[in-house]
Amino acid sequence: MQFNPKTIPDNKEVKEYLSWRATCVTDAQSKNLVNKLADSICVKSNFAVYVGMSQKPQKVEDGKAFFSADTKVVYFSLTDKEGHEYLPLFTSEEELLKWTQATEKKPFRMLMTFDDLGPVMITHTRFSGAVINPMSDNFIMSRDLIARWMTRKRIMLDAAIREVMKKKADEGQRD
Image (cartoon, rainbow, N blue to C red; front, side, top):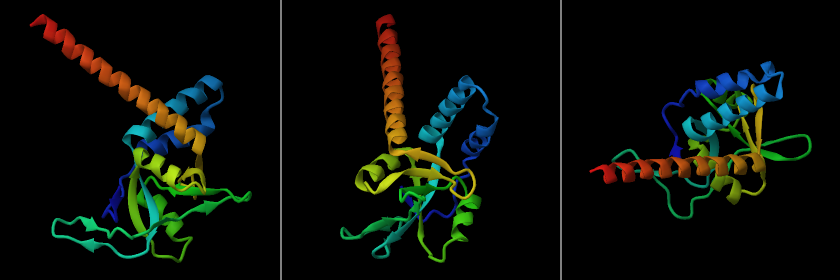
């Protein structure tokens, strides 16, 4: 995770796939879109989140922040009508500002990858999941979906590693 980034990456691919949701009319189209969206979210994206801190970090010379061991991080959340809490994730500065205008708090920003999301969901069991761009796209990822996508990513990475190892072994046999 990156704390208080100067710029928020623009996750155009995720935004594009989210905009396609309304155009899917068949199960095959929906499945294809979900696969593309999962790949983009799980591998290529950095999301901005708002957090509160029990104390401000200390800056060191190389520009990195140092947090004392007793610093508590509080993730801002949104609650639906049924009382379920979701971690809001934002794909761009534009999306982030939509929620900033809805809150008077001045929270810190943090960049989070999909790999960062799993530990947050495990540690903060109050979250029912995460929601991408809650003020526009409102794409909800349940805890179960996040877990399935994490498993899918691990399986795909394991397969890629096996392929590279096989290729190296085959090259070694030719020498």
